[in-house]
Length: 174
Image 1 (spheres, rainbow, N blue to C red):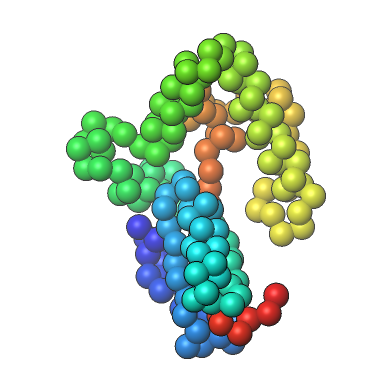
Image 2: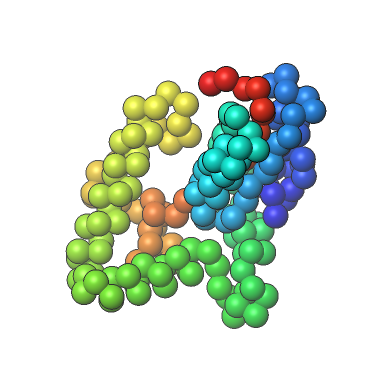
């Protein structure tokens, strides 16, 4: 999957070399929409197990340079073939989870929409304050509500767009 998005199957090695860490173990972590949690867990266990004294965890994203249809096709490769055959996509499966969550907790459509919009507004506000963020634009609830519906109840601002990697170095001090 990642080679199709980044253009290289060994980005983690190229990154380590660029940082002057040639020969240092480096790991690429990709778990679709849960990659942020996966890379954090990888770094945590490398240190907690005593295998590494320090780790450097880096994140990067590169999906917006491709047409949406191609990105969707690439990302769908993590979905079981039988589900893909019937049109399942990552946003569609996430939307089903959001719907189930709302049902289990007795949330009205309005309450779920309020919760989702608050998260998107908070995330964009944080991005606005971060000089290195990809998206540096604050949004309002009105902006959120006007955004494209991707897969009910998820809108454009609800769908993540990111990739991460983790570089381990036994002598790295941060």
